[in-house]
Length: 189
Image (cartoon, rainbow, N blue to C red; front, top):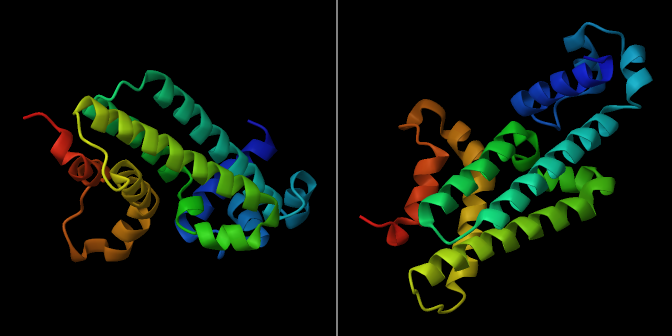
């Protein structure tokens, strides 16, 4: 494994654990037990590291969406499984979803891409929901598929932050349980 790849791996762990706004380039160098100069040899600063990790996140979401939409048939359980795949990617790069607004504000180079990606996520989830509703012969009223898709995306993006915020104060639930509840009317008993 190259030093550059190792830096990205360590950075991902630190950013996910501590949050993007807290981790500095010096923290990253210290964690790797290398000099800041060695880090700067590979990346000009934390911004380049975050941008590279975001590019990986973006690519993985796109691949997941392509696979999911190509296989979509409106089956509720398959749709839930597909949303769990998206959830897995969001959790692998949770520093992005846990501070969307901050990353959007601090990284001008990522703004357009971030907006485009989450618009695509919203559109894709809406299409998946519409397929489920069509399969169950649900008459579309008042943009129900768009509203359900928005709720699903909110759940996917915010679940990790919400769950960790409450900590041990309540029973830990899984993202699957929350997604399942959204689709309860469409599950066959």
